[in-house]
Length: 221
Image (tube, rainbow, N blue to C red; front, top):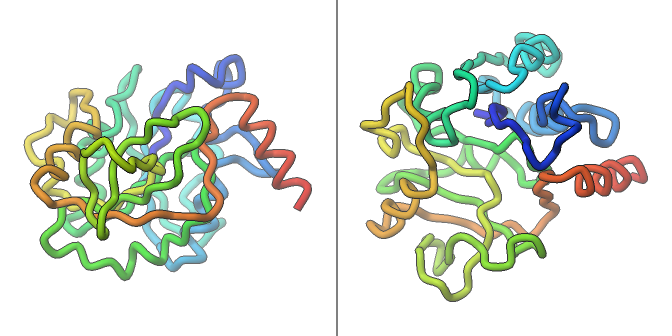
């Protein structure tokens, strides 16, 4: 699943007329970098949620055939449903097995093929974490011996990439907004969240400045 429903307030005025995942970077929409990487990894079924200017996303991406993918869409009401709420809404499309979720507004060279080989037995979530960027120095979660915890020391930043078991979202109303972090923190306290540190390229493309910097970097390559 690719999360693409956010308003992108920090990206305004660019997002006043274009959903953030469709903003061009390196010669193609940001979300297309995800689709290409998923296809190369062997993924075939993708769910994309949308809300703000949402009709533009299926219009641009279609059924996914251009990437040998089967894309299905999960529309949300105006204002969207937050991360966990959006996933809960999409559960009927995601099935009963663990699934990979990517934030639509990041750029990362992490290989999604790792998710296909992951054994989620005894876990509710597996998170990809990165070193804390300058704009988020406090981090989100600690990582010790492959387990994610809530302790303050040694925190890393959640990359917006996770593999989840559907049971993590059990009980959520698919029509109500819900945040993901409280679910993850509760599961982490119960020892049910694993993780890994990704040392490669990762960008939270959350501002016009970071979008412009990434665009220049990719075009230079």
